[in-house]
Amino acid sequence: MATKRSSATKLSSPPNQRFACRDCPARCCRMPWNIRFSNEEARRYLEDPWVRERAGSEAAAVIARGVLPMLEKDRRLQCVFLDDDLLCSLQKRFGHEYIPRSCQAFPFGFVRDEEDVVVAQLSQLCPSIRDNYGDPVDRQLRAKLQQRGESERMSTALATLRGVILSRPQYLRIARHWEEQLAADASPASTLARLYDWTTALERALPAGGERATDAALEAAFQQAHAHEAAPLAPRRRPSFHARVLFAFLLGNLCYPSRVRQAHRVGKAPFAELQGLRSLGNKAAWMLGRGTVDMLFIPRPFKLQHVRTVDRFLDGDQGALVRDYLRLALQRRHIFSAPRHLLAAVLDLSLATAVISRFARCRAAADGRTQVAAEDVREGISVAELVLLSHAALSEQGRLMKNLRWLLLTKRESFRGVLETEA
Image: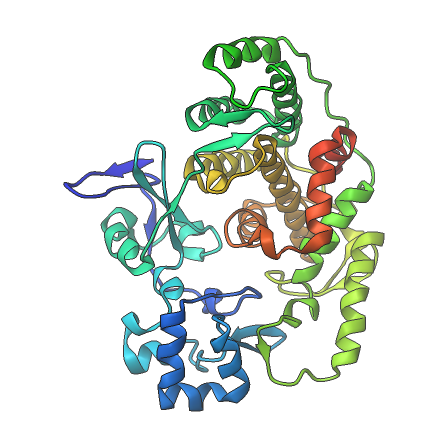
């Protein structure tokens, strides 16, 4: 990460990264997500007669909840303020400073790291960031931070599953080991399976019952964990049950009509009951691995059973793109911005790997190919950003996803089954 220093805040971003808001069909305005804004922003919009007239009464009620309202168009949700030219009507009428801070700053977020450097969280969901075109981002960081208005902070401590508290320097030492392992020329699925076992061995080696680990105890645990011999990952011919639940929940919700059935949607849905049944059908199709789905970011509907004809790729050249992304996720520090279990970070990286791989293979299958291309993987990374590592709020993922995460966190064979599905 390149660091830009000044007498004030130190800012950091990936070296040679570029960004420009162009050459994109308003992707950030046409997403099945909650765009939240402050009470002050909501009050300002609701007090403006033009905004209220443009939005309508139903959308105004959504704005009052602090969420940007969306409507369905062309089988996708889009912001009620998006014009037919795919430009923001609020921005055209009032200027860039008037639109919500989240919109002003996208695709930039910020986390203050362990050295008090503000690290830019550049979302790979944005085509400019993903494909690296535009102007150097280091010249834009300060303006984007001002637009964003705040930066997240890293958690001061993480806990092991046995309740031992690790300070920030201690858990970052472990994270650096993860990053070193992910830099090796190996399948990210196999590496993450080893890291799960290695981290579990380290946690078990720490003194039980202690509230905080000492540096000496952590050093001894490191040595014991290094001596642990991890079992190899054996690829599964068919997805495990828990992998199918994961795909049904995360990828099924990106299929039509599931992706338009959101609480912040306005306007009466045509054939709402039928849409509800079709949404259940999406979930069933993913669980069975059969049926035709219409998925976001894939240009045409495709049959899920064709995905099995696409070769797995994580141990090949395209797997390097996934490894690089996982290392970037660790470097961005967003994964450590909330108190959580240490092993949950390994779980998040593992779920992202499975989602990227499955989506890339779906995209290839929809195109009638048996080999995954780099473009498929990069778009899979966009999906991982959307549903897991950047834009998704764990608190909004529902009880099923929370229970699944806990089960995968605590049941080794179930965890490995998800990785074996794409290994």
